[in-house]
Image (cartoon, rainbow, N blue to C red; front, top):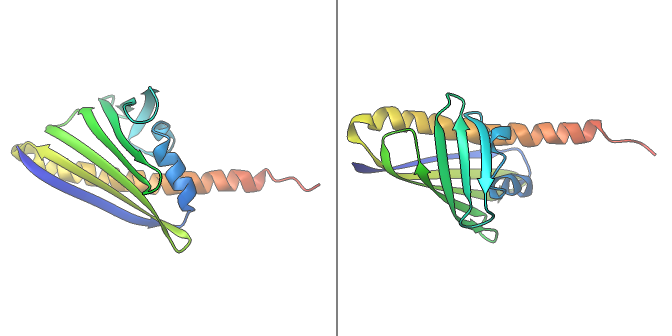
Length: 152
């Protein structure tokens, strides 16, 4: 096993409060993270667990380690994963960027050397798609809200 650090950072044209609200909610990833088919949360806040199914049917379980509203930082430990790593720590940080939002998703992994390249490529793509999905979901919700406005 070897320690691997991955980071995907993107600037989104959405409100940072909305992005942070979805990240800190723990659940609902199936709504905006394309690889996730279902997400069920047990407990609340730090110590809660979320059980997810990937679109290919594989299962994942995360334990929530930190929800820091002041820093807009969310940390979790993946306790069950369908890929070759013995430790998986995820950190998501949300920053306001002059009316846009910067989302930085970092992973610290103990990776099986033989599976390293394939796993790093898979996870990098998944995180990138997840951040893009977050932006799409927020924009779609704004479009729904705009279309449901009534004039009195």
